[in-house]
Length: 326
Image (cartoon, rainbow, N blue to C red; front, top):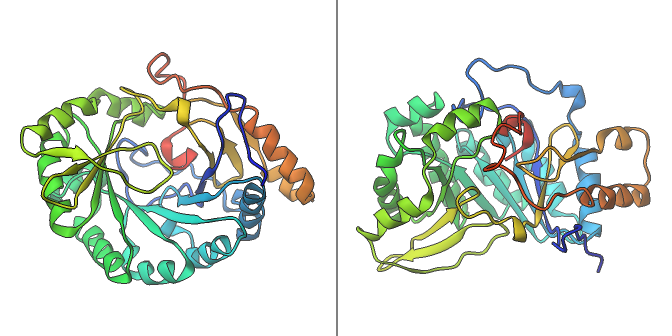
């Protein structure tokens, strides 16, 4: 079996696929209020083009694909794309990241299409604070989570970006919410992605602080979870709740990075915290052969840097998170 390996010996087995840069929420740390400079639809990769690229990655040894955005559920006919990706030889793990606002009507079709796991962004269980952070309604997210559980998704992982003075007071409430509903919980540190991310970074809170706080309320024991990401897990004793800690700033995990991001316009981003990229759309639309596409992806992976520089150069990355893909 072929295997993609970057210049630092890391196997690239995971593609995070953005199907849109649009979103039906406006989380202040991700997308500026009033922003409408979205990628033109004619620049979006078609489903056939996406299938070609992911098929090439699969031929080269990639086994995991996560569908992201923006908010992926705003892309029309997403379950049809999921079914095409699930059918590709070599793709063993197909997952989706969503804000769950539209998940109530999509959960069943996505499960039937072959999506195996869900990550749901939810920064607070408080309806008013949720509106303050996102501009949306928490009730729609709860409906989506309920539908996902009813459709048979398990585990369902809740991603909470913890921000000092914004939602850090909700940490314990989120733990109780996830215990009650049987979800997995992952805490994430803010990252200085674009002006919005740097604004949020004023609220940066290292997750060691969160962990120490939780240890005063709960007994935390070692725990593990399946998946291709960087979370370090603990379990709350006496429950099934796993809590993951994703620490891109305080304890970066660059030495084990196994992923690249494909944006909606066909740009491969090789690192979330660097500007290294490779444009695939022009090659796809000029009639590139499968063999040449495989070689282009190898060339792209050769550009992958050793690590991000969020701590050293927080102003370096000017693109928003929604432009890069989650």
